[in-house]
Image (cartoon, rainbow, N blue to C red; front, side, top):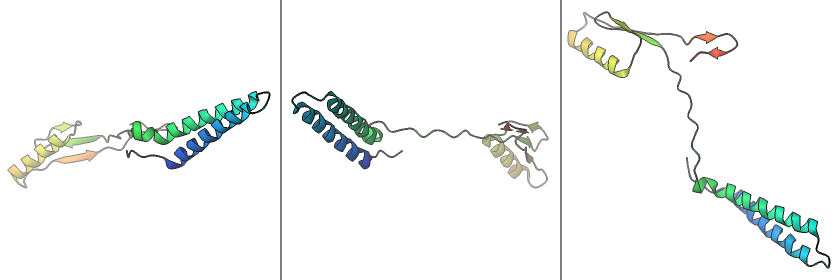
Length: 126
């Protein structure tokens, strides 16, 4: 995943920090300090820090893409020698192709792909 900065969040965070600090300073200028205004400034500073963190997070700690589940297909391989096997891998297919090339057109092998079993109201089993 690309490491990137999110500029709108960085700008929002900088603006919230500036406005929050300004609210805290302005709350102290009144003869009785305004507690609500000071708390509003502290909340704005906190949100600004969070926005800056969110804007830089991909740069510091890139997220991993969630892996999609591999949907395996079931297959049955009938080899050149007539043996049937359900564990079909690339090596087995290469071996069968090599035997086919060795023995010529008089022999053959087959690969039967089975459909994915469906369960009503649940979807596919695999």
